Length: 122
Image 1 (cartoon, one colour):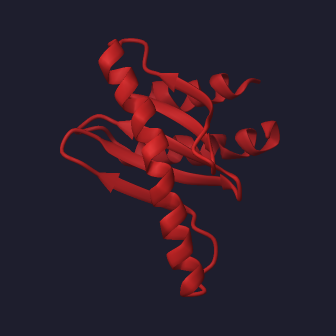
Image 2: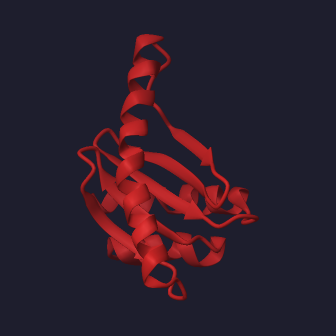
């Protein structure tokens, strides 16, 4: 199963705008955008995924400074979207972008359900 196939299993049932598997350097490994999303929105998902890489890095530094262990998940709620950032391994994280009113719990469930498949593909 490809990265894109796994990401589709997260995007479609959760109603996400898109999902991206990102390297810790901010370079996307794989990305899936909801099929009905227009070009400007697809670009927003891509940019958001890259930009939130810095947040993951800074949050991990804070967790390290407090000896709290590895960062597992961050959720950022904005006016027009919610982003769920989930660590896949020490060098890779997953970003799922949800529209307003989407069920974030369902998205988290879909991420957890497919996380092992992502790890195995890496």
